[in-house]
Length: 388
Ligand SMILES: NC(=O)c1ccc[n+]([C@@H]2O[C@H](COP(=O)([O-])OP(=O)(O)OC[C@H]3O[C@@H](n4cnc5c(N)ncnc54)[C@H](O)[C@@H]3O)[C@@H](O)[C@H]2O)c1
Picture 1 (tube, rainbow, N blue to C red):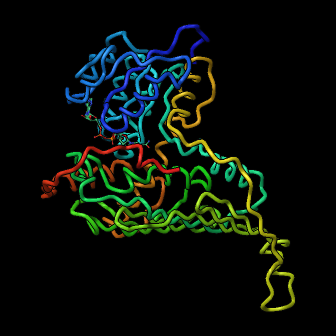
Picture 2: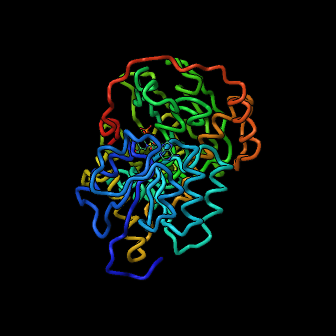
């Protein structure tokens, strides 16, 4: 980390489409302290027109070498995260990359390998880690209050998207442009949260349907089974074709069950731990007595600018990162493993063989016959897509 200085961190944003524009808006409104937006970059010149009074670039390599910025936020389509990120790191800039950190694990390994100078801050935009709900849940798990986790189920089927959404960007929902569908675009946050809270599984078996509900070539419907090192099981469901959909997390553990849904954390706590009761109760049908607790927490958090402020603070005075980019490889590995399991029909042992998966992905790109349909899409307000 750099020594504390009185200078503001000069930030450039690469890719000012939906997400990059949002980052620009709160930076221009000076909602993040100790920094200033000095430059933006996009290969589409029409995206730059609205930015007056700051530097504008059409080539990321030029911006990176300009001397005009100390740090960049990369908000381009996924494959470009890797090569632009490597260029930024190799040229001494701090880097905040949008999720997923790359389109596939081998690229993420290349990107992470370029982070050799640990004085450079390298973070990822996983803003759900700042949601008070999940912070409280993580504390509950880490306090040991739940006891050992035995099962985790997350149904994340409320990422509904229309055909107009998929038509809105040529890169969206293609193997070549995005590297996947719901697992790579909408669900990196949920998958990151699942592993942040419950750790990484050791085995993954998944069923992904490609273009089940939309005219796309990538997955829009996923049901996966996870196995953890302690024998715990997990089920993960994701979908962009279901309305209204569900966002429900259920964690079963030795001391009871936690359900997170509709912004509430409900803990049904066993008076006697499950395995103790199971071995010591004389009656065949009795169950442990329970307490029902609506776990209190102060609502809020979850905004991107909290992660950006944390990134700036890390540059400015060494504040620990909420989401070090290196951790972004975990959600990516899980997303890749689910697609790999569907394609191979096999249960995938983790860690995933990144080279083998890259070959599979290259094959999907090479074999693609997908032609994007022409659909008239309205200008999208991305902020309506952020989940709280
Ligand atoms: N954290 C979140 O909540 C969140 C939400 C939405 C999107 N995202 C992520 O943000 C990224 C961008 O998504 P989006 O929805 O804004 O896409 P978008 O298509 O609206 O914007 C991408 C922009 O990048 C530009 N671009 C492409 N290649 C470039 C290059 N080489 N150099 C400079 N600019 C380039 C495009 O012209 C476009 O303006 C993706 O990684 C996406 O997953 C994150």
